[in-house]
Image 1 (cartoon, helix red, strand yellow):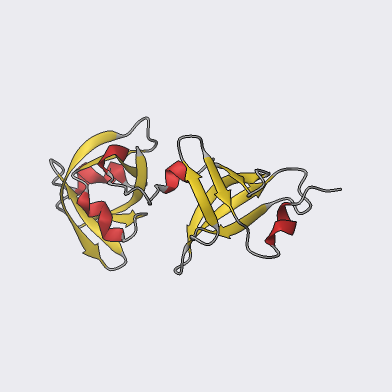
Image 2 (cartoon, helix red, strand yellow):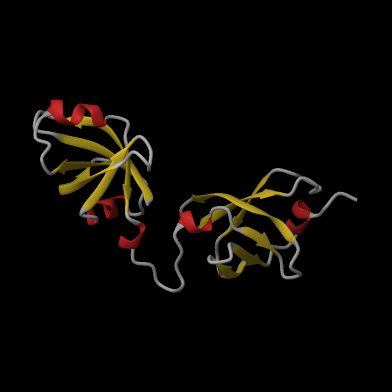
Length: 176
């Protein structure tokens, strides 16, 4: 399951809900017929998406069988998930969820750290790498997820090989 959004509030009296989408573009969330809604992935239950459209910076969604404000009020604050198998992924594309937890190595096969998060800042996606404890500068560092830096991604073995931008290797150098 993939976490794709949050139900913020009911909207109107006929069972619509305001949704904050984590997909890019935001409207991509509307392309999935079955949403799983719950506080957690394990408690989420399936619902059929009746319709969904842009509503300012959010989405306005209607779920099948939920036709009153009273029916959707309990959904406030719930998370929206979809079946990961519904997401088409090309050979050169990756789901963020698949990249989280990957070990990051350099060209010399030296472990730099682990992917702890991903961010989109407009120009490109960025991997947040949590360094090893013995790094010269321990903590989290952002590495651009671009062809010039990312040499190989092996999702099955949870490994990403990188060529660090000039000067960035010092961030991952072990203390001497």
